[in-house]
Image (cartoon, rainbow, N blue to C red; front, side):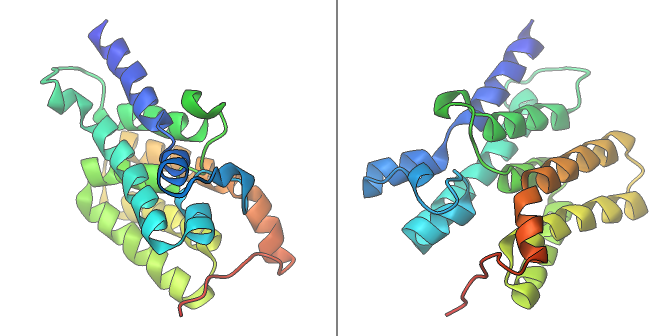
Length: 196
């Protein structure tokens, strides 16, 4: 019973639309009506600027971390691996009940799960993300590359079948949610970031 309630809570945490809240409260803008229409950090950066973008990205990471730590926070002795709670937050982020079930692409929230469960793996994927971003200037490509690199890293260094399985699922989520970006990269129409 309690475990089921925590699954619901994890989903609700993931459903908090950080981009929508920050855009409306501080800028009077619904970011769903601008740019890609996405609620995630990338569209917030492009639509509202660096401060809002960092705030949304940090909030979305925190959602995954908080959901993963729910059993610990509630001192719940459960047979369910904490990673599973994080997955419910990712589902909430992608299909948020508080924003018409149209959310973000789950990159930051997925990373937040790893921050709560395997911080070293989190640091590794962040490193890969920024290296790829520096070389390619594509946020979407960097997100997919970081997810795939994290999966390969875990296959080589971890003997944790559930972690590997969930990483595989999250990587598939991220790539699927970026399928339109992949087409634009191939067609060379995907926007690149500007460092200056």
